[in-house]
Image (tube, rainbow, N blue to C red; front, side, top):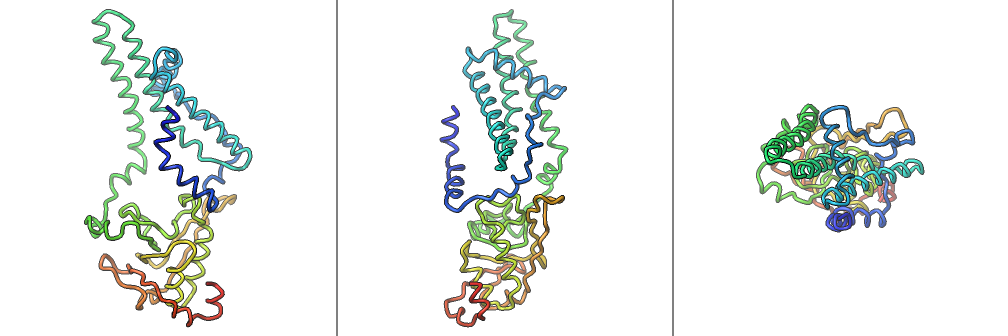
Amino acid sequence: MLGLTALVSAPFWAPLIATALRVGIEPLQNRWYEPWMAALPALMAPDLVGLVQLVGLAGCIYYFRRVAAARAIALLWLAVLGWNLVGYIGIMVDTPLLYERMNHLLLPLSIAGAAVALGQAIDWGGPEPWRRIVHPAAVCLVLVAHGQEFVRFKDTELYDLAVTTKTPDAILAPEVADAYAGAVFLTDYVELNAYLPVFYFINHNAHFAHPSSHFRERLKFVSLISRSNNPAFVAWMLSHNRFDAVDYVWFVGRAMTIYDDNFPGPAPYNVVSITFERRLFENSFYVPEPLSTGFYRLRAPDQRAVQQFSTLELDFE
């Protein structure tokens, strides 16, 4: 079952591994894991959910040999705990992994185990009236345990954002998503890729950047070209660089705010503000887009533009 899971999920993890092997990897968020953080996942709190977890784990162990579903759940439990062990080793050798993300599986696995265990216990052969009462009660117990987690999540800021955040009217139309799908944006519009299937030239937060994106090098690149007063040079560098060719520039405010990793400082982020003068985009290299002000399609300069660069700009290129 684990092998099948790995095979089915290969389209998601295989490209990441291939990219890491090809260009290297720098998972900035993971650096904040230190040896004192290596601890067993919190399990079985003294409440209803904890009771259901305990029943599920005990039931899967008891029915391990006789029931295939219990055996599969128990093996997945062991796999998650094994991944925790790998994570602890990673912390100790200063190569941390986001191992604790897998711990979110333990609760649904435990509840599923409880459902299997209760179902087996009820079918032991007792009188029919007993089954009629206990079957629904067992189902309700499992559903209430699941519901408890939804109630907890409902009180979080993430839930409020999911409920209250609305897609701006200007980009609701399906043809808008089709027009910009897959494009690379240099933008200060942090929420843009939540509304449209686009890519950022640089992520706004180091801890959410792709580990193979060369975040620090991109940050240095954008910071340096933002100091230029030459529109042709800025357009050329955005179009011809070793990272990604920028298709669109969209600035809602006056500056891009980038949260760089600040390990091992007391604050997790070093806030970097990058400002491009608006006049850099008010020329023939940038075509205004009707969707919003400050939104331009980049028209890449031809090779003749390079002849007008200064010695310093040529050296930068």
